[in-house]
Length: 365
Image (cartoon, rainbow, N blue to C red; front, side):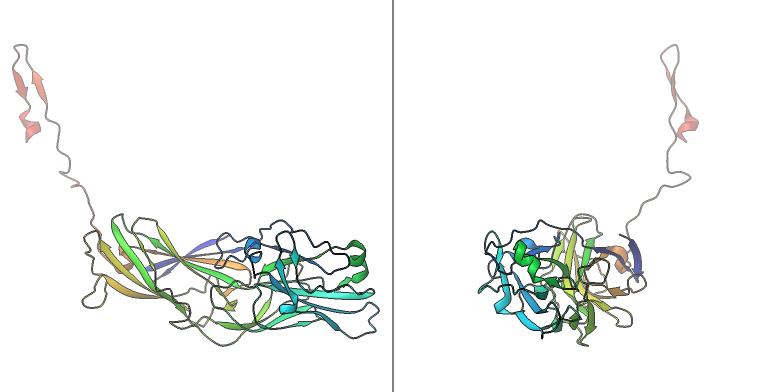
């Protein structure tokens, strides 16, 4: 992980990016003989926007949708659909295994290819057998929903091998969106209250079409390729109106969303928020706010693109905004010591043999 400090006017931002590679245990498959069954495995998220980790997908009504097609192994037949990627192919957790209903059974002498996405969303999607590619068209990012995708091998899998072993198909899900977090950090001394509210981000693409590569199972390739829908966010798209009040030096508040992966250059993406500064007596300094509320100010910060100029699928980005009096050009109370007379001299006192105390007058002057 690399961390870079960027300065925008009086607001400092730090940006870091991390790939997510944590794993969890596999779940057992169904035991019905000859049935096509599935396993699911997904990277754990330490702080997901929506908890699309393995435990969340196991919740009632959640799970994932599966696309599946097959052809004769000798390639003399047409492509046929085994799973349509919708309700007929909704795989859910039953308490000890993944299942769906009604079951579909293997056909001997055929090559199958599968793709899956989670959560089980109603989206416009299709699956290309030859390219082993899943396409989700005009996906609208609501900011709170994480999107996971997976596929089996590009060459497909032979049904005879799975009929003999009765093994479930194993999916490894990967994040298709970019997770972006803005961390507001309190740079004021204690007993100063900093309220952050009315947070939103503008000029971010909100809709896009993704297409997974045929060899998605390889960890060395991009998760997806995205094409934008040219629909940009505005004040009301990803707005956080509740905000939070910070009153301890170093305390933080996070504004976090999942966005369509996209290039940032030349878009002028801006973060907007309102800051109110007060003390325990509900008094506040003049930070350049509107007349009548000088201690409340609207701020907009354009995202830097020199270090990170695009959001990549499956990466999490954290912009840190530390706010203090320096942000508003306030004059701090400072202290110094008089270089010439700042420290008084010692007073010397001596005692004679007869007990009389003699005072060094020079030391007193």
